[in-house]
Amino acid sequence: MQAAGRFVVLGTLLALASQARAQSALPLKHAPARTQAAITPADLMTRLYLYSDDSMMGRLAGSEYNLKATAYIASEVKRMGLQPAGDSGGYFQNVPLVTRQLEPSASFSVEGMAFRPWDDFVPRDPGRATRAFDGAQVVYGGVWPDTTIISADQDAGKFIVLGAHAGPNVPPPQQVNRGAILARYRSAAGIAVVALETFPPHAISFFRQPQTILRDTPQQNDTTSFPVYVYVSAAGGRALLGVPPDSAKVGAAGKTVHGSVSFVDTPAPARNVVAILPGSDPRLKGEYVAIGAHNDHVGFDQSPVDHDSLRSFNDAVRKLQLAAANHQVTPDQVQQIHVNVDSLHRLHPARRDSIYNGADDDGSGTSAVLEIAQAFAGAKVKPKRSLIFVWHTGEELGLFGSQYFTDHPTVTRDSIVAQLNMDMVGRGRADDENGGGPGYLQLIGTRRLSTELGDMIETVNKARKQPFSFDYQFDATGHPEQYYCRSDHYMYARYGIPIAFFTTGNHRDYHQVTDEPEYIDYDKLAHVSQFVYDIATAVANLDHRVVVDKPKPDPHGNCVQ
Image (cartoon, rainbow, N blue to C red; front, side, top):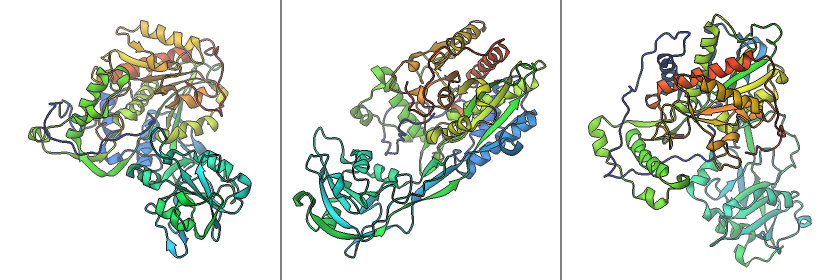
């Protein structure tokens, strides 16, 4: 699932405390076996151990490892005999991702004093070409957003230096509204905000990391679209102005700046995998039930941590969260958690880990869709409507693969009658979610466009020998977790396609290196897979399209839960 804000524990884990289970009863490795047509825990275990293996290096979209992961999916659907539905008669739909980063030759100086990128100045990427500022005159613009700042008609061709408020009850200066500043001083050559001292190291590290984005339309060639935008320290502001910023007069001229600061695009290969099982009814086979999951995760980093101590620490945090109203845990509570690392290492050797395997997120959904596809491919009686299976790339980066597929579908968009999305469907135990257990399942979005689809899912569930207990709390309007907006189903829903999002919820290993296949509940994963298979069958065999009886959103507007 796409992160609302990625948080990874990297601090030193101290001695003494909770005897959390160091590892599960499942092995670290599992020998693959041949899969069969029936949906089974053994099949899913084979698939998920392969798909979330360390060799996949976290499957980051735009990386060679995501290409390796999608090659595995394509080989499986080809083996099943499904029809390719990607580009040019193949299984892959290429998605135009690019990685943007600071141009290596970027420079910024004043009167022979060179500012070092990421140390003396932090540039922000506007997502397109920036304006040349070499030789521009520095002007002090005042403290944003006071009424005494210079007017917009004074900025043309100038390099504007702005102060930022700091102190109690004032947002951190790094959160100064960059969009509002750029809108006001659109004609400036550049803008420097004096706020660098307030930046925590992790914020600078985030800005410094290359960012992967979807470049679906050609980049505008207007080199005057945006001024350069940087953060500098108080010393940097003094160098630019010739006087300390807090003593400068609004509108006063400063020094002359030199250099060039721009960001460059590098293609980041990424692809959806798309395959079709044709329907059996000549009248209905031109309509599709879409079944999907995301094929990517968040990759790896260069800072290995101790796997078992990290998991024990996060286990303690999770217990506090589950015991607290609204899952709120105080910093003081977190500080009081200690892990007896020596005790853990007496059970087995230390295990250094830096790979975000993404077994549950979303290796579980990916494996489930493969298992469902093989079950349909092996069934003697095929559903009336066709099924289109889509493994989307770039979900973790911003739902890029599903956005691209629904903007450029490989079948007619209006022929897709519903989309069933699985993201994190291999957990949901009592220590993962309050009320969790073998029958626990979260449903999101099932009636937001179609009451009929939501009712059908309830009907199919009641007919099961072991019905699920549905948790609808995260589907509530305005829920702060915003799950309806954070996975691939929404990109279908924005076009008015009825959706159902299936998930077993959050847990202590979410976006951690500890999200490994050994911690998955394979019996539960098989039950969820069979349930989605049964729902897809019901929708595909319906004598009419699922009725849309709710307002459709603006496909190009912001998602609203």
